[in-house]
Image 1 (cartoon, rainbow, N blue to C red):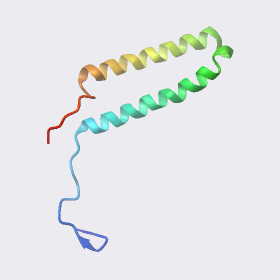
Image 2: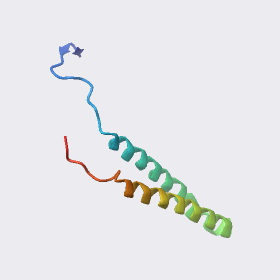
Image 3: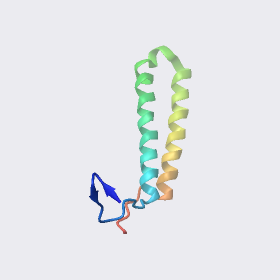
Image 4: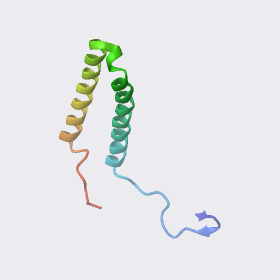
Length: 81
C-alpha cells in the first residue's frame, strides 16, 4: 500500500478494543445530558413542578444507565495489549 506516494511499512488497519467505542458513545450521551440541563435550569421558574419532576425522571434514568455501565466494567482501564 502507498500513502502520499510512500510505501507503508506496517499494517494500515488496527483493531481497537470495543471499550473505546463504548466510552465514546457514553461520553456523547452524557454530553447531550448537559445540553438538556442548561435550558432546563434557565427556565426552571417558568416550567413549574411538572418540568422539575420530568427532569428528575430523566436524570434518574441516566443515573441507572451510569450505574449499569459502571457495574459492567466499561470504564475500567485495561493496560493489556
